[in-house]
Image (cartoon, rainbow, N blue to C red; front, side):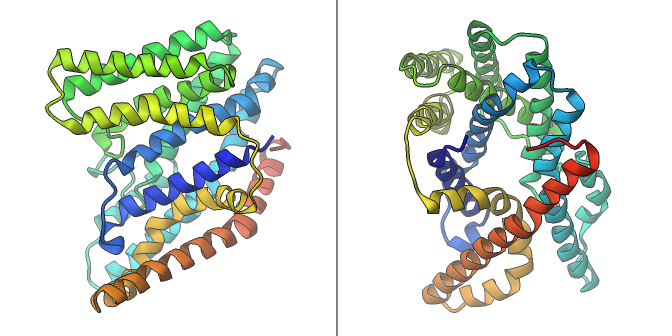
Length: 338
């Protein structure tokens, strides 16, 4: 079952991440753009609950489940990593030291590079894929153990949201996840967001969920105020987006019967856009910086050129690499179907 409105949301969130990661190209920052990753986690919970909860309850094995998830995530993850590594290798050959290259094999194995400050330094968005796989595995066993009643899901979600924001209050900033020393923070973000998505799917269309997430946002804000950590107004905005706005947006969009070829296309290429935008920026940086140096018109030209190439390459990778690689992976390792 395809929800076109959610495809569009996924694509727009990927674009937010692109702009957030490349302020030198776009000439602007996106305040709180990092929260788009939390929207991905929430959306993932909704989609996986739709696609796999009943299959797991019906006896889907862990092997088939993890093969299907890796077939979806790993081929593009790997090719994006290798493209990024090749670009850095060429820079190193030109005389620029690239210590991130020592992390190639760890990252190929979907493991953080503990020796570096950044866990996935060759392609920074990869940390979220690592966290996604972690939470997928945890969720599989939760469902397998039969904890699928709505009250169980709601209780888990309540506890995870409270845990996440207690931790935020204790450190006085939003959680990271992309650094080696903060990998566990990414797990917390992923689990809280994913569980919100599962709750939203399980009671889809129920207006009381909007009140629930409104109550949770107010509860968290009250708790943070009590802890005295609202000196950073940014935390207020993070709470509003992650605890209230994103779940409410998903609740609204999931109930829309929207037909849009553009949104479908945007959803199709969103994963490629997300994973390829950093390697592509490294490859194209010399040309783009020359254009930017020409002034405002040059910067506009650089932005348009980059986006056209990014969307074109992402569409090409989706049709010519992602889909065939996914089918091969499934046929090779389990015979499972998507």
